[in-house]
Length: 503
Picture 1: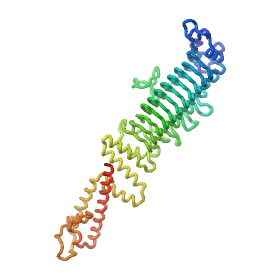
Picture 2: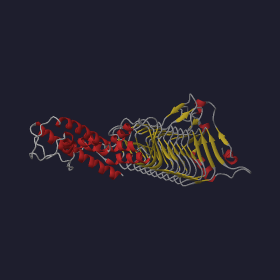
Picture 3: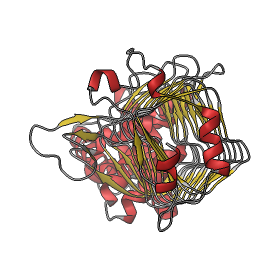
Picture 4: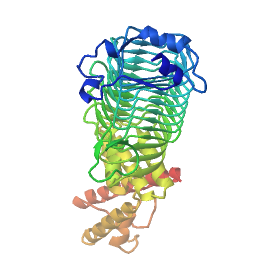
């Protein structure tokens, strides 16, 4: 191993029996495959010089490392790569500095790496960490790779504690299994964060992913991964390729996050309890792709979020009581598949357990901006009908009157139809009514049509009302016609005022 280090070659102790060489299996490895962690630390911190013309590096394959590998605070210049190794005890890397550190398919009890600094990559693909790992305030110069890793919780219920983590380029954790809380509070990712095909589960607490104030310069992917001979992501998978979706069993929190390109939830599955949330409060991103499966329980919260393009499906949103949109702003709606206006209005209604005009007005504004004026009026009409439910009895009755006549001013043509019908019916009826004069011979010629119109139109005097006496049922008919005229005129005026305000 010493000579391999000086030569920069691989020190390989595998038997090439896949069962025996499995670092996660139960087959024991004897002393012939065992090395003390202290020896590795000596090599990395104060190892011999490289052979002439070579670069020293530690490349191990199929070894069992006993004891604690303690490199806390150390500066490790050689390249480090370990594949298929077993660690008996935890790895301590707090405040250590590496050029590049790669551990592939290793069994690790725990990794402590608070304030770890690497100039290049930190790779842990296919590793199993039995008591979690800590990367709080760590700085990874290029990529952090956790693809297909399996991470179990520590005694505090966290699988990965990476608050304040800074990754220079990509953070890839595709097909990863996390059993506990994955914490990325205040983390920064220089390019994209990919959790394609990963399974996050935390039955021990409220959240499976806790990442408030997360900053991702490009995109966050909570999308499927395709399984073939190798892990593939993106694009259209070939026929027969098995797809594994992103699944989250427990709450997910991305509050106050900033995402430079998109947040993509395509086909994601969220298994929430009643008190858990898919929380996207106050996030900012040019595009939110909410095309996941509908959460059956819990809540989806977008309060205060700012999005340019909202890409969504009608089947992705939860029903009444499962959605909160207070202060949610978006500029364009890009539905995938059928998303009729009636379902969009239900979407807004589901987000307002108690009446709130803001989501309705926001939707109407977006529709009007895209030229859908008729749809915008339908949304505002739905807002008035929802408001009516909160009014006392008198207000409800007046609301129904406005709705039936002019649809709260959003269908003013209805008033003309109602007035024409009332005028025609009343003119026909008054043509058969006795009409003795109130002033003897001083009266105009009787005209039932003008008399009915004079009663129906308030304020305007057509010279018929006031000259004829109606008695019995005809007096009640006249009074009713006057009242209906005032109601129609008032609702038309209210509707016209509302239309002028919108203009």
